Image (cartoon, rainbow, N blue to C red; front, side):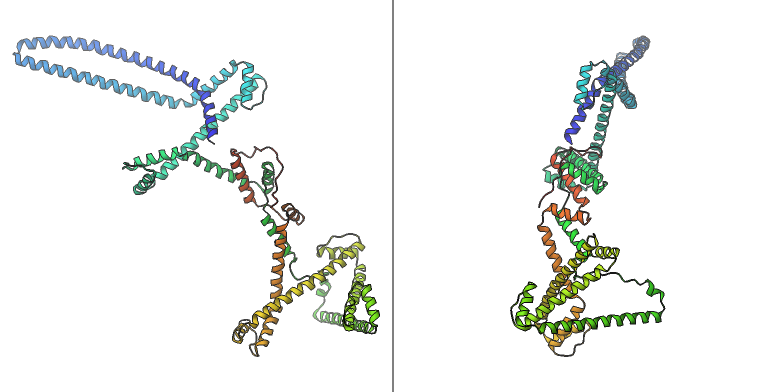
Length: 552
């Protein structure tokens, strides 16, 4: 910033120094000549009149003296000498007053004609550039970073450029004055004891009055680069407001050009975790079935609705009864098999054929029940319309495709959900066991108070109260919440272990915004500060660079 001010000051002095000297010298010469002539004529007239008066006075004095005694003559001579000295002093005072008025008038005229002087400076500069050889003008254009052209075009371009530089210099001067005035007002707002304390800290002694202390502290502040620091703070605030006004896409492009990493892994991981939690990724696994149509049921009256519900309930009970009968037949058939046949069937299904006969029967029974359920579910899915299948897959966040492919995808998803549900319930059982152990360590009186706080019956022994508390916790899904929180924490740790580019890709796939405006603004300003770059405007863009993405 200081270098920029010095450059502007040099250009300004080069534009105005010669012309101002010539104009001011000519004006001063003309004014001085006019004043001198006027003063001389006035003095000549005064001298002539004084000579005439003095001659007449001398004659009168001589006549009077001749008639007076010696003592009177001596006194008259002394009085006349005193009068002459007073007249000389009054003349000198008048001359000094006239000189002061001339200086004041000259200053007033100079201030009033500031605009005209600037116009004259521009005209003189244009005349100077026109008189300059073409090669010298081209060199000047090149040194200013401007484009070459015809002589007239180059002169206009250069004049506009110099006008901008001059305006920037004047603006910088106004800023400097503003910060100095502000600092002066801050010091003047302090009390005398506070100023005295500051002076003592700086080692200033012998300053008694408030103006002296303010003046000395202000000078010290300037010597310690206080002006530059104040200007830098103003520029930083303006730059931050400028960047904050941009949207995230523009800031992202700006970060790419400055080779600044705009992403924060912790924030991206937190947003991914929040998105997955909202979509039920950490909750108890469940398959989202088709939404049952209720429009027709709403049109029926209460009696018809009750009859329809009763028919549906009877239909479900019949289906359940048939399913139970089928399971009983299946278990009976498996129990009728020999040990060798059981081992063969288990091996064919890829299951371990060891243990007691009852254990092998139970394992084979569960496997065949699952196979039968899978075959039944496959037939059910294949019987659905293609659009219904698409809707079902969309509700479960699965990709759609051909009908056969969608059936396979849905069956695989359901099998995975069953495995996840089994693992989830195992974790719920572990949390319930931990809770039970914790409750067993409490006294019976403490368990009674806990039952009362939950609105549960307090009768019974210790085991009954623990059972009631565990049943209530299971009903309120307290163990589910603990398991969900643990799964989410584990997932966050897994995401943090990934490379930042992988996390960014996950954000893009889930349409999650990975940007934080405040972070981008802060990093852009830090990059500009470290590079020592001046604060740039919106239309100024740095050289294009590839964005740097940290892998941490």
